[in-house]
Image (cartoon, rainbow, N blue to C red; front, side, top):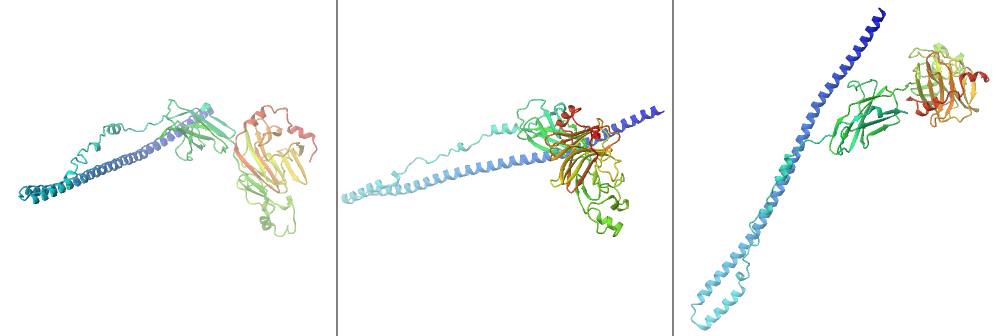
Length: 498
């Protein structure tokens, strides 16, 4: 019966996953159909605009040519009209002179005839008819303004849609996810020397497999990539996966998208648990800051004048269970007394994880480590067998030490600007690094018997966290050679109790 139920549960799970996959595919098809309709409408509008632009250019060219022909016609007509006018005037003068010369033949008196002959000779010499060019200044030929658009017609007849680059192919084997960076590599299945650049698109998701259409983030675009790979660095891995797709572009148009690829980008993401933090700590997501006035208003309401006139560090007697606000998660009591502690809101139950912590420059005292959920509300990090940490003290004297079970091991290294924390739950290892140089500061070797939470203590200062980080490659490499080279939790049993 039990085996049949398990088999049926597996079948139900398989069917549910398949139904979800089919529904996602239907959503994708509907989204694609909508895209086809919208894109077709846009392309038709663009086509109309392009042809209207061509028509406009042709009209402009036609108008310009018509103006040229009319100007040439006017110029030649003006030249010919001018010549006709000059010739008419010359002809009129010549006819008048001819008539005078003809009449002069009838003069009988020699002296009068000689006088008339001299006048005729002088007038002939000065007559415009004899200085006039009888060659037209312009011809009636207009062939120099004729056109032949046969080549242009052939070119227009060859108009066709732009050549679109083929879709590239992303090679998952060549893609690399490491050190909070993702390198995406792709190739063209057919050689295309017209490709100018590529466009890479990516988005975060919590779903494996094909990208989903509904309830997903927008694609982010990286344009003008000249090569066939690209590295996104400095990412915060606050989702389980990332989708990637790429398209090739020539000088005119972008081609089809490649088939999308989903890469795993899982990392530990957590915030600080404000519901159980000490009242003297101001907690906001990934930042915590010492606040000496924290909780005093609530305490005064509960206790009246009980603590009037007291000053200095609160003691366990000053904070009662009734004085704390109700916990949001209801998972544990709020830290109180001198345990200025705040825990992460996400438990580590398996795997390898990494986060980083940076202290304010004037922070007088702080601790960074992990603790079981059972850490008492008065317990300080490193002073019980349920917590492990490294502690930095900049007050009165400077100390840097590893702490566990109220045992201390001084660390003869410089306190780094930022501390990296590596937790290998299954391997029972908690290591601390200089986050910048990846120098190992200290390692605890133990066996975790229950889930652990990131833990932090701060007094007179503040801390800021960086989460959503992969285990750095340098840390992974160091972990392989670390065993037997560093201290462990057991080594703290031989040092002086604090």
